[in-house]
Image 1 (tube, rainbow, N blue to C red):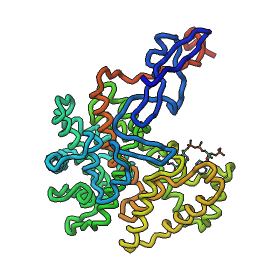
Image 2 (image 1 turned 120 degrees about the vertical axis):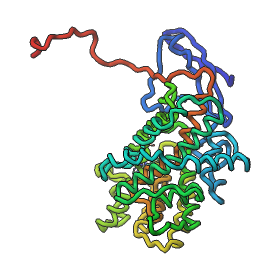
Image 3 (image 1 turned 180 degrees about the vertical axis):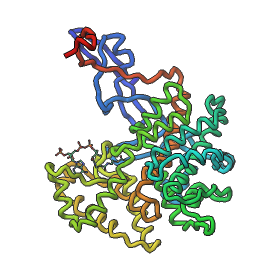
Image 4 (image 1 turned 30 degrees about the horizontal axis):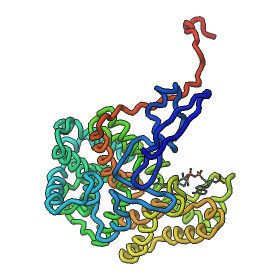
Length: 429
Ligand code: ACO
């Protein structure tokens, strides 16, 4: 125990223990608050509520720190490997050569979807939002893998995790192929995780997509930078659903739905749409920034600001470097990148943004990079989901392993009418 907090209610004093995390974060432990005092806490949006103890990811938003299992995010920049990071998040340490080999083999073994799942894609309209397809198809996976409902031990869980991480990539690529009316391309057993995804997205039956190493590294890094962000909306959703002992696939399908919203995973799409609007409308970056500062305009500089990071978003810095290198190498001259750079320059010197600690976030550059790779805008949030999946799995498993885990069930303050009599329909006015 790291001290006590005293609460005085109606003249009576109650003491609650203070819990301290390994990085000095402190919390008042109120688990028995209601039982002892008859009161609950009210915290809409949960901004002051710790829902669990977790050993997966540490964030210090004031100092721009993000660490996976203690490793600073910047250290994944050299030779980025998404599969290794997925393992790290889920199992708590970097994989040994043998662990990596077994996990990679499982990823390959599970890459295909049951053949009859292809018919499910056919049932969706071409214009269906890919996030809806993704969530529906992850849920549908449960029907094909009842063997993963009850996970008996760590090895069984590892097989389920590998299956899901591998299949989300195939589902995402098939959703895209369906939307553009192209034939599905089966996963290639000789390809690594990221090149295999790009192969399924962009190969043609008559022409194989060749993955440039710089593209492979850029996409690996994007997926890594999205892989976990502690108790965000979608991860909390996965934990909430998982707390009812719903299976891994059902819980992660719910996570996809939570990520879909524009305030969460949809923000990188909003950045691209903003840049496109500026470009097509021949609006100068200076005028757009002026608009974003005007409260009456209801315009925000998308890709700027973050609920947690109040100095800089370390992920944005890394992606800015990637964009600088990737685009010239691919020979992409993207006017939207020029606009993004100019917006950043202006905003970083403008007292409005400096005083409010508004800096570029991860979404500011990820959209530009995905676009340069050839990923269509409506697939951006799907890419985020592929990246975030290891984090969801890690949290689902951590919770499942926690002794005394209880179903998540917040309370409320009821503000509706008092006891009211039912009125028969014929007597209603
Ligand atoms: N452009 C212009 N003004 C902004 C912006 C912005 N992008 N972001 C915040 N502000 C202003 C607000 O108007 C407010 O000004 P005020 O104090 O004069 O009223 C002040 O900065 C604080 O804003 P809040 O909304 O209270 O900040 P909060 O921390 O709650 O919101 C958020 C963070 C939602 C990310 C916000 O900065 C925003 O809307 N940004 C644009 C959308 C975006 O990029 N979202 C992606 C987030 S990253 C992710 O989800 C992976």
